[in-house]
Amino acid sequence: MCSRIASVLRGKNKAYYTPHVDCGDFVVIINADKIQFSGNKMDEKVYINFSGYPGGKKEEIAKDLLKRRPEVILERAIKGMLPKNRLGRKMYKKLFVYAGSEHPHTAQQPKELKF
Image (cartoon, rainbow, N blue to C red):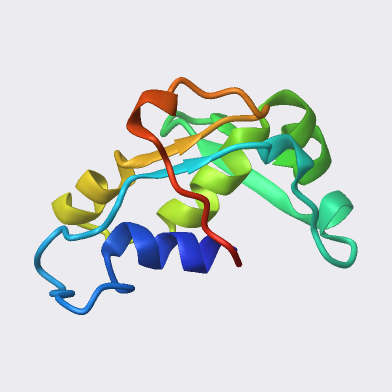
């Protein structure tokens, strides 16, 4: 799912796709708290944050992160699939992830993508 979303953010689903141009669409993801992992990833996958200071490494397993901030799991997965430059940062700003089914983007009339 995350790879399909990353390609929509980049604009690879369009006929006029160009790698150096941001021609992707905005993406709104709802119900991020209902995400599921395959296998034992829920108990074994570790998310690591490092502040840059000595002793500033923090580790958290996927099960705890899903309870605390479920939208971060999808955001990190999709951000890792985007280009690592200023164009990728611009594409990442067009991604909106919400834990529940409520979102403030109803005025933009979003269309549902089927996977």
